[in-house]
Amino acid sequence: MLHVARIAVLVVMVATTAEAQELAGTFDQLRVLVKSGETLTVTDTAGARIRGKLSQLSSSSLVLNVSGTDREFQSTQVDRIEKRGPDSLKNGALTGFVIGGVLGGVAIAALTEASGSGSAGAAVLGGLIYGGVGAGIGVGVDALIEGQHVIYAGSGSPRTVTIAPVFSGGRKGVLMTLRLSR
Image (cartoon, rainbow, N blue to C red; front, side, top):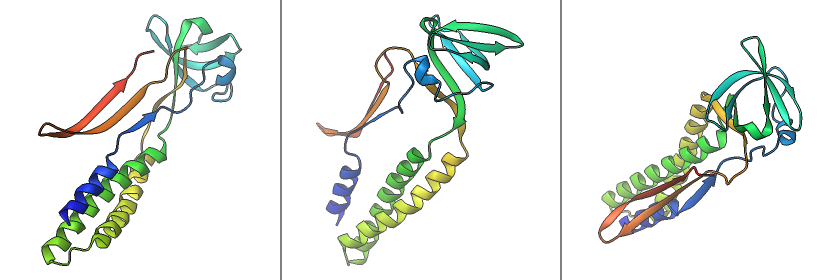
């Protein structure tokens, strides 16, 4: 039964790649994501962060009202634009499901192994039930989170996170790669 639990953990931890949601790459695309009066944080190509309310947006420039003064940015001057908003519930549900499923499946597998019944079906069912509970908790936590989200990124490649299990040469662990370069 412990063998089944180990296989279940490995299946859940199979290497995956998660990429950020689609971002606007042009100011024309940005028009769909923002409206006049919303508070935005612009990071210019020099790395300075400026926060203000959107006054105007065209295909080549945007104007922010910063402390009562309008400040215009050409699209070539903008590296990134962020907007405050709610966190995606999807990642909380997925994270909660995986954590609850693995912990629940392993716990049920250990209990059935200790009692002598050793049912793989019980471990899988336990993993699914506790995975559902974990997904609910993850959604609840994500519903409470609000933060800055990148909605526009200048030219370049998307940022990625890769997570993979490591089992080699007596080593066990998790390899996480975060690519931020453009």
